[in-house]
Length: 188
Image (tube, rainbow, N blue to C red; front, side, top):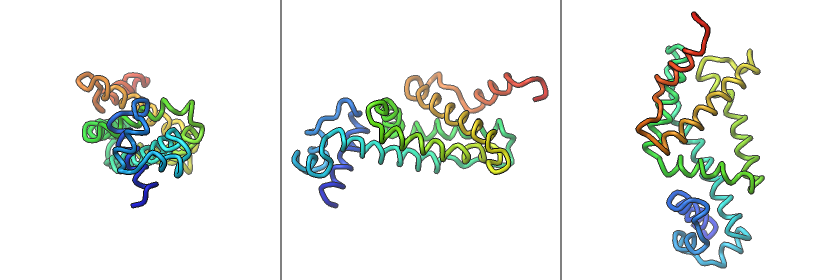
């Protein structure tokens, strides 16, 4: 592994352990086993290196999210939604550092246009898959699929924050399905 890859690995480790705001160039050098000059040579700055590491972390988060989502297609749509939420909660418990880093990544997007564009693109690409998980065909109903996919993304984001802040009181998938069901008209 060359210095560039070592720096990326060290920066990701620091993101998970220390967070973006608390990571210094010296932290990255210590975690990567490289030297300060390598940061400038390969990335130009600590911020550029951390942005590259955050993009990698977001890719890992997306991969983890994709592996997490195994939904029993025989379940009714609201129970599928509950299952997705329960699987996300389980993943947060198993990979807390990754999920915490993903939340911190979102807070950096105002200052990192490349990061914002990458995340927005990933979200847009993921919406149809989330909709399909819940039984909405993106081909025959693209507008509905986009709306359903957006709802799932919103629930995952909110659920993540709740599980990270207060896991004892974070809702279960069944509770979220019940809440959505309660908002539907009778028989809906």
